[in-house]
Length: 423
Image (cartoon, rainbow, N blue to C red; front, side, top):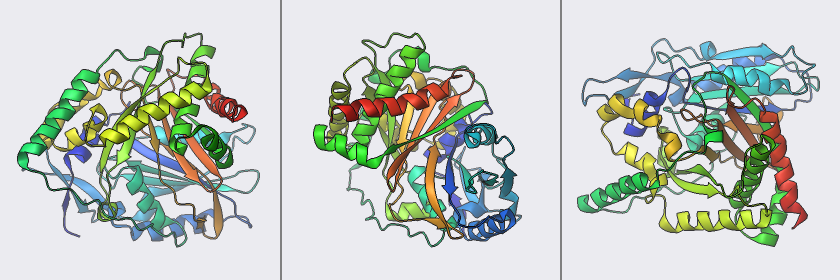
C-alpha cells in the first residue's frame, strides 16, 4: 500500500508517549471453549488473521516535509507471529490472576520501530477459558477504529455498516472561528485539578475488571430517564464518591471532571484507521449523596454537551490538536500534556461492541474489558464496553497513586445497587 500520512492528532499521541505514560489502549477478551485449547493453534490462527489487516502491517516513518510529519509505511520485515505471544497463568491461587498479569503487560511500551500492536494469548484458567490481550498504540487508531481491527481477528465478525460522516461545507472564516472558539473554551475551562486523582509519574499500572447487568441499567433508565451512557456515568460518579470517602477524602461539594471522547468517525475512516475524535467534558457530581440527583446532574450536563455538538466547547480540544501543524506537537505536546489535569481529572470512554455473538476458533466471547491510556499525571482511566447482557468496565490506575483499585471496583457494584434500589 502507498504511504499514508499520520494526522496531526495521531502525531500528538506519538508525542505524548513516554515510558511513564505510554499512550497504549487495549482490551482483555475472555472466551469459553467447549474443549481444551491448543495455544499454538490459537497463536497461529491469530497470526494469519493479523497478517490480513493492513494497519497491523504498517510502521511509522518520520517525514522531512512538512516538518514534524510522519507516514505509515509497510514494514518490509513484518511477521505477524513476532507480535503474538502465549502466557500460561501460574498464580492460580490469586482470586483474579488475569488483571494482575495484564497490568504488567499493558505497562510494557511498544517498540516504536515496529508496527505498534501486540497480542498475548493467556491460558491456564481453572475453568478452561482463555483470554486474548490486545494492545494498540493510540496513534494507530481510536476506540471505534480498534473494533475494526478486532473484527478481523475473530470468527467472521461482521463490521457494522455505518453511514459516513459527511462534513458540512464551511468557509475558511467559519473554520477559523470554530477553532478559535474551541481554543477560547479550553482556556476558560482550566481549573485546579482534583488532587486525589492526580498522580506521580510511574510506569507501573494496576487493572481492575467489573461488569454491570444490562437489564439493571435498562430498569434504571425506565424509572429515571437518560441514556445507558448517562446511567453508567452516574454509577461511576457514585463509585468515585464512595472510593474517595473510604480513603478519608471529603467529597461533599466536589465534582470530578471527566473527558468523554466522542468519535467523529465514518465508515470510510473506519477502514483507514487513525484517530477521528472530539470530546465532551462532564462534571461528575461526586459531592451529591443522593444517587437520583447524581443521575439528574449527569443527564443535564450531557444534554448540554450534545446540544452544543462535538465541535464546540473545551472537550473538543482533540479537533484543535488535529488542526495544529505536526511540528508544533513535536515541540510542545509533551509539555502541554502535563497540563491535562487542569482541564480534566480522568477519561471515561465507551468502546462500541455490536451485540452479535462473537467467537475465536469456535470459542464464544463471554467478556470484553477495554483499557484507556492514562493521561500524564492522572491516577485513573475508565473504559466501558457494552456486550450482550453486560456492560463491561475496565479500570486502569497509576500503581503509585492507587493501591486500592479493588475498592473502586467494588464501589462500582455498590453504586449501581443504590440506583437500582430506587428504581
